[in-house]
Length: 202
Image 1: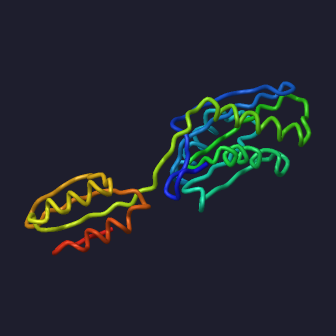
Image 2: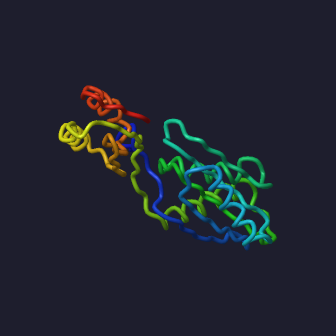
Image 3: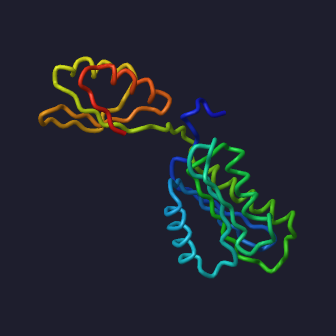
């Protein structure tokens, strides 16, 4: 179960696995991804590396699971027999920011739709089993500008709300770039704006 509205699960690294079913070989690859462009890059790379394969089926989810961007593709297999069972493995593990690609080399024996569903599901599951599931936190980034005399008050607020300072600059005003988990964004913004002569930018 997802622990809070600003956390979600994803995979820690790339992983792969393979299975055989009636002489067909299914090679599964799992990748952490954060954009459609990353998905495209991985698909292009796999198609070049395994250009002689019969099918490159895949599924991905990007963003927080409450409102993800997702897609699955059968790549020529019968509708619903490949992409959807791969996607089902992402759903069952509540994973986001994750791409799974299953490449099939046809072995000469037709598996039928139930057989295909089971093979793609199993291959996808095996690639994820080889990985490590991690919990990620959604964060917002802000920049604040303030006079140096407000430094102690600002730093107390930052510490209390567990903000992470990304960088600091000093010119005529002190400037801090920081990130904070999304569930604390409104509160830290309100607290900082209560200080005198502070400007905050998102």
